[in-house]
Length: 82
Image 1 (cartoon, rainbow, N blue to C red):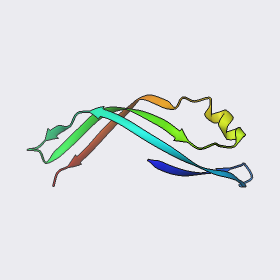
Image 2 (image 1 turned 90 degrees about the vertical axis):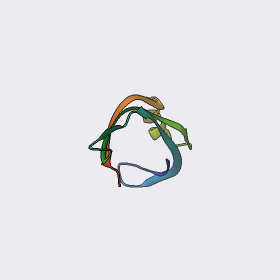
Image 3 (image 1 turned 135 degrees about the horizontal axis):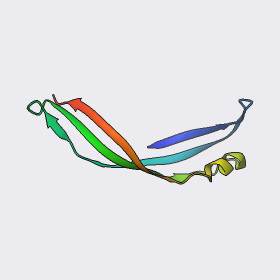
């Protein structure tokens, strides 16, 4: 996913703008129910921010505290087939 960012301070003043790419890598399994009419998909994911433009220093200090990867995000999707 690509996302445009606006960096705004506590007084609602726009400091800068930026761009970020955010990816999710997911692995799971689809369990089919009721003659393939419905399904559930349990999964586990890793999210990753591979790229973002330069940001204001105050935002960068906070961002540097966190990893660019988040491991082990659970997922449970469900739906029906047409």
